[in-house]
Length: 72
Image (tube, rainbow, N blue to C red; front, side, top):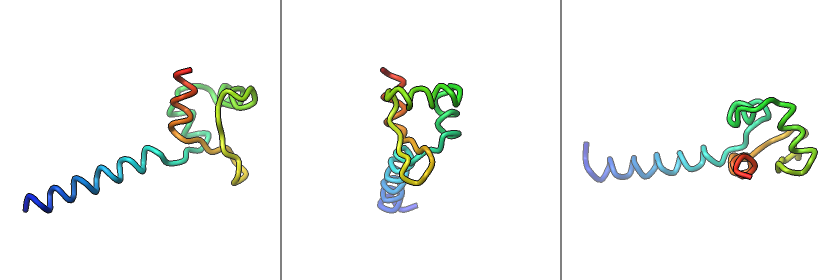
């Protein structure tokens, strides 16, 4: 494979990996990601410890928000 083409493909892959990391997660995805019970997430939301978006009528989380909550 041509070196320039391989370099461009690597750049595209890095961009895709960055977008996947910042994607929205549903409650079930967030539960799997952080490894806690669903009620624990809801309790953290209710207390104001965990940021959540409810604009679409359901809880949506960003990975950064979950990481920040886990790290205190």
